[in-house]
Structure formats: structure tokens, C-alpha cells
Length: 84
Image 1: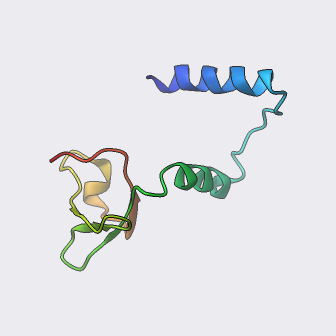
Image 2: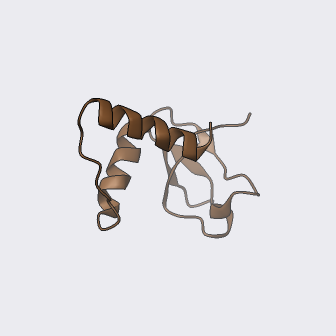
């Protein structure tokens, strides 16, 4: 599903339930909280060897070489997909 279709779907529901549509450009923390609340079981912490350990399952994970984060290696990541 494309981002634009998701946006339109959310916009439709917000209008239907009379939820005010406001910009959150000035509140990046609000966006991060929303993402983390939806993917709370998909958070991983970087390990000393450069791998990541998932918080819930304790699986060892690695960034895909094509991932934009591969050059940065942040301390924490939120992921949506795992390739075995």
C-alpha cells in the first residue's frame, strides 16, 4: 500500500469520526511515539559486535546492506520486516 493511499485512508477516518486534522511538523516526538506504540514488539538495540538484539524475542538481527541505516548504525531501530 502506498503512503499516499494510507494518508487518504487515515484522512477519511479522521473526518468520519470528527478528529481534527492538524500538522505535527513541530512535534516529531509525537510521531515517534505513534510509530513506537504500533511497533512496540519490533524494536532492537545495537550490540557491541554491530548486530541488533530484538527487545521481545531476543533474536539477533542485522541491517540489510541496502538499508539507509546501514551506514549509520543507530543505537536503536524499529523494524517492520525480517528476512530469514
